[in-house]
Length: 336
Ligand code: NAD
Ligand code: WQD
Image: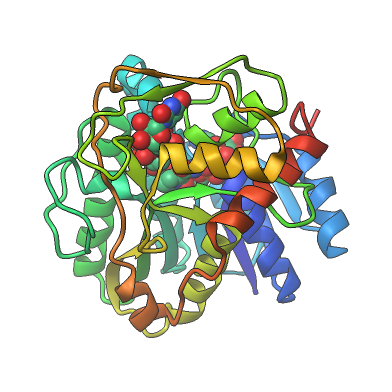
């Protein structure tokens, strides 16, 4: 039996594939390479000594997915494939709804047709919107403030309805907080196209000399140093969260939303100062006005993942930043 990993050459997917290969799992990746490269597969092989079956295909392509399910004996799917840039989603909403919503529905239809009803889905803390106080827990109301967030929320709704319609489905919607870090080997990591939107890749590229200066978006939030507070989680802890979720699917009847975070908040300036200390590089920054749509404090109540999946994060901020820096300094231009 095999596991199908959509988006498996991407940032979080590739780290999850490493953890699964190390457990001896047989892996099939479907990815259209819109935001990743097959160079990742050589690195995954170097880490694990194992190979995967790679299929270049789009999740919107029903015929291609049908062939994958016909040709392989798939027991469960981990569904990472999707577009993820919040700003871009405001400019290209149709691409986001097409890729993230239509593509997901197509995947679920093909899964249902082939009787594969075990699924782990990449959701996001963005579904908590802007009105809930942290720590955020899974019982809180959900909402979205941009098309990207809407797509995550819509797919969650699709999955809750699907599970209600057919009791054979076991689905974990993992709501990730802020994934950062890289594999400890320094050979795979986050490789954003163009100028990064997220804090950590931006800071890392300033440290390595690719970008001149970080803009800190606001220092007038109601937080200890005035800068935004987030729940950063090591991508390997997140990857292990997927392993635990797959192992727990037999216990999960229906569809469950589960936070994957550490439960701790860290400010932008704490990140900058820790990065400076660990890398030994100056991080040139200036404070600018708040970024539209940002909120001051976001962190998880991570207790449900512990109870339901037996999972909790174990890597601290120093490890997250040490591993980010190892990846960035060893691969200043990403995988190229
Ligand atoms: P990523 O862009 O590195 O990986 C996504 C992968 O999906 C890429 O390899 C891309 O080529 C592929 N892909 C995109 N559209 C596709 C399609 N239509 N068909 C086939 N492949 C397609 O992103 P990531 O950071 O690894 O994120 C993985 C998932 O986790 C995404 O669904 C994202 O929305 C979600 N997520 C990410 C974060 C984060 O901060 N990185 C936070 C919360 C949720
Ligand atoms: C973190 C903090 C910024 C960049 C986003 C998505 C969310 C999820 C994770 C997918 C904030 C500050 C940032 C910079 C800065 N993705 N910042 N200068 O906004 O928490 O979440 O990624 O699901 O949906 O919205 O992450 O890394 O962009 O920002 O000062 O150049 O860093 O204001 O406080 P965010 P982020």
